[in-house]
Image (tube, rainbow, N blue to C red; front, side):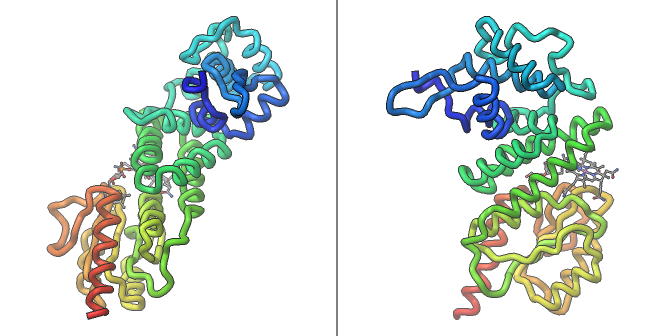
Length: 316
Ligand code: B12
C-alpha cells in the first residue's frame, strides 16, 4: 500500500534523524524499507517505522547501534505508533534531565522530529530537517511551524529545569547556519534599504536572522548588524547608509530601552520607518512614530512596503 508507506525522507523527518543515518541503519543493520512495488522506490511500512523508532530510542540512550539493531529486528510485531514492546524499561527514554521531551504544542511531526534531534544533539539531523523545510515551505512557514515551536519549547524546558543549555546552543547554531544558507538569489543588487539590528546587549539574534532570510526570499535587500549593537553605532550606521527602514530587535525587557528608538527618530538621516520588533518592547513605552510588528510575516510586509514606496518616489 504505497499510500500508507513512507519515503526515506519522510521517515527521517518523523524520527528526527538524517537520511544518511537511515541509509547506514539499512546497509549495516538490515533495518531497511520492506515494501517494494515494481517501478517504485522502496518504501517504509508502519512496521519498518516502528522498528526504526526502537533503533532511534536505544541509540539515543547510548546503546551501541549493533545491539540496538538486534533489539529492533527481534521486535515481534512492533506497534504502529512506534512505541514497540521489546525494549527493557531501563533503556526507554525519559529525557536525560528527567523532564521528558521538548514540548512543541500543536506543531506537526516535523517539529517533534526536530525536537528529538535537538535533544540528541544530532546536528546533522537538525540541519537536514531545517534545510528541507526551508526548501519545501519557505522561511515564514518554517519559522512559524517548525523553528519557533521548538525554540519556545527549549526555552520552556530550560525555565523549568535549568537544563538544556547545550541543546539551546547547538540548536541556535544550526538555525543560524540554515537561515544563512537559504537562497539569496532573489536579492537585487544595489543599495540595501532595510537595516536590521539587535538592541544594545541583546544576544537573541535568531528572529532577526529569520527576518533577513525572509526578506531575501521576498527579494528585499537588507544590511544586518547582528547582536549587541550600542546605540551610537546604530545611529552611525543609519547616518552612513540612509536606510528606508530600521528593525530594532529586543527579546527581553532588559534590552528594551526606548531611548534607542528615540535616537533613531532623531538621527539626521531619519528612516521612513522604525520598527520595534520582539517581545522585549512594551507598547506603552514606545516613542510616537515607532511601529511594532506582531510577527515575522508583518515585519516582512512592512519592510517590503517601505522599500517599494521609496523606490516609487525615486522613480516619480
Ligand atoms: C535561543 C535562546 C538563546 C540563545 C540565543 C542565540 C541566538 N543567536 O539568538 C542564547 C544562548 C544566546 C540565549 C541567551 C540568553 N537567554 Co535566551 N533564549 C533562547 C530561546 C530558547 C529562543 C530565542 C528565540 O529565538 N525565540 C524565537 C521565538 C520562539 O520567540 P517568541 O517570543 O515566540 O517570538 C515571537 C514574537 O517575538 C513575535 N514577533 C513580533 N515581532 C516580530 C518580528 C520578527 C522579525 C519576528 C521574527 C517575530 C516577531 O513573533 C515571534 C515568533 O515568530 C528563548 C526561549 C523563547 N521563548 O524565546 C530563550 C529566552 C528568550 N532566553 C532567556 C534568557 C533569560 C537568556 C539569558 C539572560 C540567559 C543567561 N542567563 O545568560 C541570555 C540573554 C542574553 C542577552 N543579553 O540577550 C529567557 C528570557 C526571559 C525573559 N523574558 O526575560 C528565555 C525566554 C528562556 C526562558 N524561558 O527562560 N538565549
